[in-house]
Image 1 (cartoon, rainbow, N blue to C red):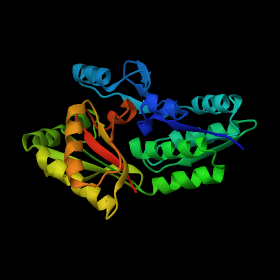
Image 2: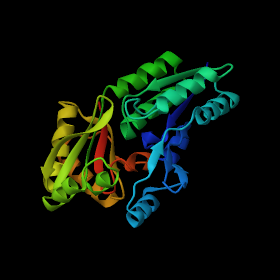
Image 3: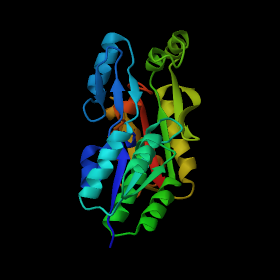
Length: 283
């Protein structure tokens, strides 16, 4: 029976240990500072990243992996005995990652490689890759893997709340004056995935109201069902994420314990430190 290897990029926010456990290869997003210093999601974490950001008052830039990085991952999987590769990429609406993976697949001299645009990000993307890996490990066919993962993709949702607009102002995404006023008014922007992008849904005041709104959005996403899988997301705010999880447990039916996951630096530079959120798959 053919065996398929699963590849994804680190915008999936999959913890490396979990990816290794399920045989998933991670291709890292790159992080570049203005002085030429370059890192990737596997060589820098949020603590180091934001220590430098706060010290210098500047946000770095991110860059998609090049086709060569994906090509190396595909070749390694095929040479390692896989009959084919399925690669799940962060939404093409926010990154050139998908295009790079497609170019890599097209440049291979031989080998069955399928590249999928998940249309989402972070653990919403990660849960899709996990579902594909579990199906592959169970001996599913290529068509079954793709169908299983796509069914999960259609049942995902992701929401987050920012604690500050300071970092968006540093990156030029909002005016500094607006960020300062938001801080004075204790405004907590609520984010969600819309048309493949992590967009501002609304603004609420105070952390308590922001978290209550996250809970209600999750309830709307789940409907009359349950959360089959969920992950608490954060950027240098693990304790807050765990507290959010305790609130959500009281509001929602959960079939499993949540993962507690830090957004990878390739994503966290777009949100800033202090974000908390949740990604879920409804049953």
